[in-house]
Image (cartoon, rainbow, N blue to C red; front, side, top):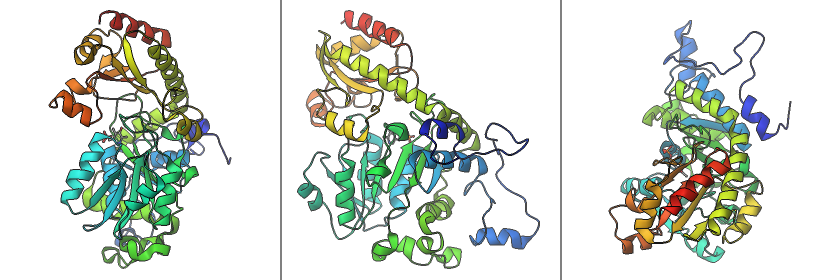
Length: 426
Ligand SMILES: *Cc1c(COP(=O)(O)O)cnc(C)c1O
């Protein structure tokens, strides 16, 4: 059947068992695959034939789950990686070499910011970070002749800024480069960035996609829309022969799957951040309920954000689903069904009050994780950012009283009762 809804793709995408075959995605826990002749295997090594030979490059379980995510995003090709970090690393270095440059929203996940601004910078790839709310002129001014990509997050973790995908896509395309969007917080249930001009999507599947805090993982999906050959000089890795595969040209020999084929055949081969089939299986299981979970996450978070906003002990609330949010209009445009389950807010009384509040929670737990089925909280000022004083925190956009609340799928009244009793102790 064609044109299935996302709710249905969550259950069936990528896997169509035939008569008598397993209902659930089989875990192919094998590093290697057997062939009758050396010639059969040789063809795989030359990318002349399709097939499996070593799980670092491809594995049937991983491929089924990658195909499910690809279908959810509406892309043409996709792959899994061992973490979200690996997904963003591969997405960039698949098209950027030392001496290249990327324009990036300044409002992104801290781990990605570090990967880009320190590790990739040290390897010779430079990033210009722009205010996501900048004007088109300011955005265009960030490009350089060596710019090879633009990067942003649909909903930034933890700032919860909403990316104006069309604005960023427009600027990227005007400069002949693709837009890469990390769609982790929105998930394809709430936003499909390809519909707004994004070319490549990445995910930390560790979050809502797995949804149960069980398996770290990542994914990359290609829309197939970016015309690499039209900008061939910028992307030699895709448009000139790869001698390690007897001169195959990814964008020519693999068409719309060229970008993902290169990331698999070249980057997985050399860097090896492949997930275990067991983790891919857990991810596939999590995806089955993604649509229903997202609906509940968003309904709960909306109710809780509105409740917090009128609470006397709460100084401010940041949630893109609130009318008071500066991102409300963008959220309505890009995510009409809802945004995500993550809220940030301030407790009156600052750092100490925030800590008292968190320590008093009974249902919600204190964890670094975010975006899974159980409600959890993090106080960046006393954990991830604890080395900073109040002035430094302010400069980093992390207020000392900021609590990040990741709303789960419990009954909303139970979450509110827990928040209420903990706020009463402040
Ligand atoms: C968590 C996260 C990452 C990193 O993913 P890991 O799976 O932890 O490696 C990347 N981007 C966003 C938006 C995230 O929330």
